[in-house]
Length: 128
Image (cartoon, rainbow, N blue to C red; front, side, top):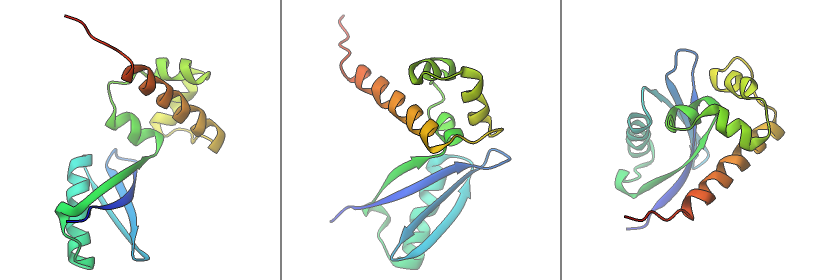
């Protein structure tokens, strides 16, 4: 069974619902849900319904807007991520709330900071 990797873009709507979109065979598929797991299941169902892609063969590659990212990874502290990105925490809070949208450069700074933090975590060793 071959795994099908599909980019899934996830954005948070005005009333905090999540919207997902993906392209498959040049078809745009869009759905909304309350959680990422629910959204993932709905998207797999739509892929089966329209494209006859077996749900258990689908692996999504997530792409998040800033609001959805901090909803998914709610353990992240906005002020700490902002510090690592070299930006004002208040500005990052505005991005997360949807009051403002980051430029491409600002989004890249945030993404790089998150990747740097993840790299640091991967090197962590816990002793007992």
